[in-house]
Image (cartoon, rainbow over all chains, first blue to last red):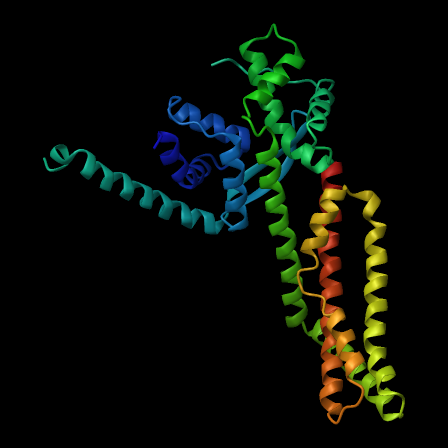
Length: 112
Length: 228
């Protein structure tokens, strides 16, 4: 199983966290931010990003607003009230999963 | 990191043409793809300012992967389906809750009830009496569709098909009513029959109004898209 599969599983938490930190972002900006923040270790392609964004919108976690930027329509995504609550839950769940995996992968370190 | 170059207003039509040539001709779809594509073209040009715009577009398109722009459009269409279905069902719910609409539904129920009752009591052939309600409803439904098709030229066919499916979420029972009417020559349960057609009238009213609310939403999206 490639690292991409693990990244894909945490995509929702990543998107929510980025929007929590940055307020509102557009699609391309999210892909760039993920690449920069992970120092190139994590990349989100459009085929994974847009279905995830639209799913979050349909679940009521994100809302969109469109405006003209650089002569074209730019769609910004931001968290809804429900999305803000869900963000902390998603991040906690992801941290918990990472901690549990660390216990398995580094038994000596984690046991002191 | 290279500082991104900004595409000029004169260059954007070339990008739109590039998108159209890949089969995405609906203006709403083009708008959905354009910004992300333009950002990537700018990134490619910033990394290598010597290449032509045409080459930058090809390189940017390749970076979308084997599926090209399709995942963006498919995700967008799914989002739209969800949005229009939500509009439809929200309208249905608001019609059921709002006092104003409840009154209209009650009136349509009474109309259906009365037409069935009067035609039956006046000694007409039962089939004629029973047929009147569905025929009026069919006419109503047909008139509604004629108005709906009036918008056909304003919006792209793929979007039209999408909204048409979404805005017909409640099943249309006209065909069942016809079978029912043909076989129902005599009845000893006049009240039940009248109630049945009364309900059918109000149900159709809800369907038609919700259909048009959803359509208005689509037209509004198109207007917004052309303004932006």
